Length: 261
Ligand SMILES: Nc1ncnc2c1ncn2[C@@H]1O[C@H](COP(=O)(O)OP(=O)(O)O)[C@@H](O)[C@H]1O
Ligand SMILES: [Mg+2]
Image (cartoon, rainbow, N blue to C red):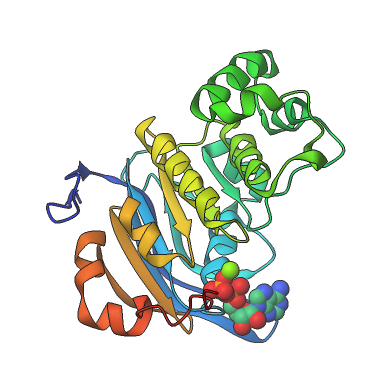
């Protein structure tokens, strides 16, 4: 079904690229997701928000096929004739279909160069690796002068950018990011969100888990809040930013900010 976000700032009309419906997930006997549903419209940035432990990373693992028992419906390109049932796939197969995940601690290889890390991210036709690196560096230009550096010598922000770049090497249609701003200084965080917007401008759909809810909603078209493994609030970002219940429960004044000295 076409979705329009007239209230969401940049109005977009789109079909759905990812449809998650009534997903349950558990680790052993511990049931974490108790029926979660989200949609990512093609071409959009969707924010996935909620308190620590609410199940956000678990939902990303369920979508990507990482070590969690899952049930429900998770379809990539659900409307197309080639709708892909992600519940049946392993992570590398999900990547091959056009969905890639950057986990919270971007999993880069510290002993390899930036260039080599990017090479590893390239899948399928290896002959296109050089061309892909050129394209990815075009999207994330701060990497251009770092290509020969050992990844271990990068700053936190540069590492995060490399983790995102490596995921882009598989040319995903949908990129999933788990707390890309975690552990980064505020001025660096702005840069990461700007990178996300740039990636989106190049046509990639994004699903982003974030603790920096206001900042994330500022660049997202739509947002979902999970709490205790269930959907709580969702809506166009602009509306969520003004919703009194959203503000009271999940955007709360400055109570989570550290004291300034
Ligand atoms: N590998 C695991 N085994 C058992 N429990 C886990 C595992 N990973 C996460 N959990 C539990 O699942 C719940 C949700 O975690 P998570 O999805 O990481 O939340 P969020 O990303 O929203 O902070 C938490 O209670 C957490 O302790
Ligand atoms: Mg998490």
